[in-house]
Length: 169
Ligand SMILES: Cc1cc2nc3c(=O)[nH]c(=O)nc-3n(C[C@H](O)[C@H](O)[C@H](O)COP(=O)(O)O)c2cc1C
Image 1: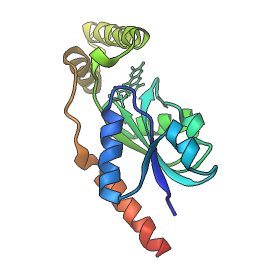
Image 2: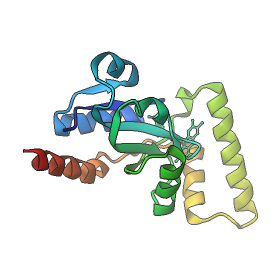
Image 3: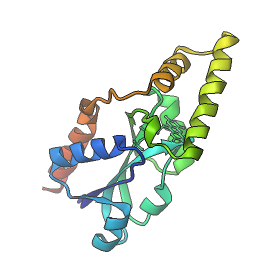
Image 4: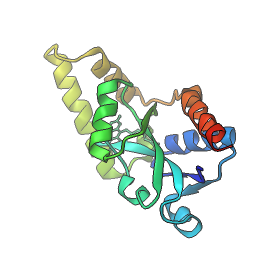
């Protein structure tokens, strides 16, 4: 039985998804810090976190619990190879990818620098006519900031959660 949602969010997008999922499922929701005081080691959980350098942030800490699903929030457009890469880097099997956004004003100085470097690299690729349509979309999102998250993209994960409940009942 899944006991709770645990989330880790840097600028708020993952938190939005995790709270929306909590509202739809009725599961309790904790930060990693709160979970340590409340949950037991190896409890079944759903972990929501953001993607940093193609890896789920703080996945190591979440592995204290049994991760039934990891919901990974990134800025890139969804594609299957990306999900496989995230699974491999995070060493977790069940990954559900969600498109988040970018809030420049909430990034720390080092994070801002990293994102500026990625943007510069993508722009240079575009100049050489080597950018893919996904790269161009990412340039647009990074250039303008991106806030258009779609909470309906949680629906398949909610269906999966409901099917797990039925298995237990
Ligand atoms: C330092 C840094 C590295 C990032 N690396 C990736 C990445 O590899 N792939 C990706 O899709 N998004 C990447 N992002 C974008 C975040 O995953 C995205 O902004 C996400 O919505 C943040 O969620 P949050 O608001 O819950 O922190 C990166 C962001 C930062 C600050």
